[in-house]
Image 1 (cartoon, helix red, strand yellow):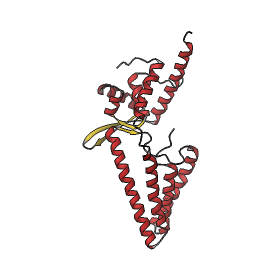
Image 2 (cartoon, chains in turn cyan, brown):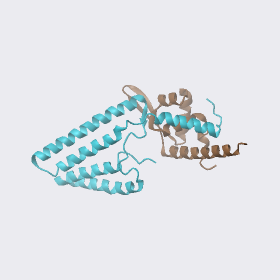
Image 3 (cartoon, chains in turn cyan, purple):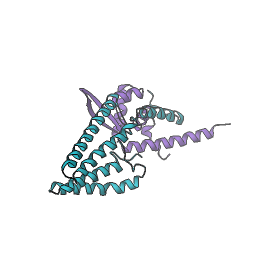
Length: 152
Length: 100
């Protein structure tokens, strides 16, 4: 293949064609939203369960763990297909509900993560309620800010 | 011209950067097939782009088969976007300069 400089029109045609070939393998439409809902649902349900007692606590914990397991299985299956095909799509992971507000997203991310870590430390130090709070802060953080950086 | 990147001014490098700009990452063989490049040409292209900091190379496995995964870095993405903006401008000027 030639290493000679290209004309602007040839450059545009070649770039658009190559970009379209990669973009054609986009994520299944249902996956980013489903993945976000399953993960945040699992962590939130487990977090709420930590504030309850008795049967509610057990049911909440089992439901949270169940949703988390479904999220892992679905994600592994989808990632396996992408890896076999040789292209991981750009929209593979959800950027969260604040994706269209990058400035707000940046402002919100750090405080939520700090709150989650502080709550987790308190929870590990023996405050039961704090583990629930850590789960809820984590779920909220992922719901708003997603699993990856916001698109450009 | 601002944004024009000499490194992306050849067809193999441009195609690889354009392909990687459309996905999160892709494996070496898939990029070679999609961009219609021979493996030695792609290998040489990737080394140049990696040395410039435009492409990240990661070795992995799918099952037992080794795979080389390529992705565009932030620097590569910025360079590609800048290059394409400059090329679009050039194409517009060229179209305006056509007689008739």
